[in-house]
Length: 139
Length: 166
Image 1 (cartoon, each protein chain N blue to C red):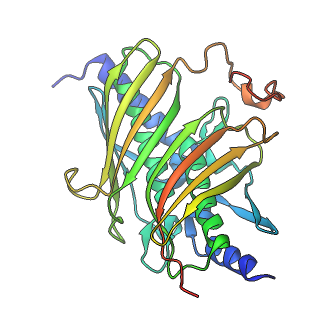
Image 2: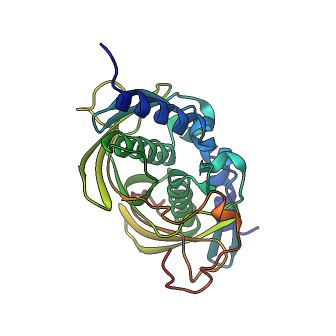
């Protein structure tokens, strides 16, 4: 496993809430896909049924944190300053994927955009834009 | 004091939203106060919902779920009759880490309802809303499931093409 792989496994394994939701990730080169398998306890609206909007937000925030860990070794976990979430379609009872794009990784602040989708990437179900305080380790 | 039918209905709805929503139940959400466009919810502290085990602080994602859920209940508490709602967008600012080992509360106020959109502000805290862990601003679509029936999400998706209206 590459260093980035190790960091990715370590960061997801270190977030108890990620384990609670069942979030995993796959890395192909530097491209990471985060995976949220469907399970009954992530449902918010049981009538439709639809995944809880908060869970989708949490999943996308974790995707951003995971992508940051892949991009650079960190002295400590990045701290979320703010997130802005848009909900586009209801989350169906199926696997959800997410990918993050780091728009900027500075010495103190990182700007990250995340998109989550289910059947096709072209029809995202939610997006997140986040600002994080980071502490990349000097090399 | 006699509770009005509307108050009673709102309380019943809040209970149903906590117990009937699997994620809310999994996190142990409880509504402490509801009515007059206001909702106060609690998430009890437990190790499974921590974000960083080094600090023992509850995950930011749990705040997201709590603030979204509380905001939704505030919208219902502002409406005369029950209608389906869906979060359009949610912005959360994190002021400071939650205190490890402590329950977190969220107070949400639906300060404006138009024909199709509701606007909410919410704050997460341990003791004092003036000393927040996080604040949120959310908008909700009203009558979001117009025409959608129970189990609609179990049918094959018709939105396979990009740009389709939800």
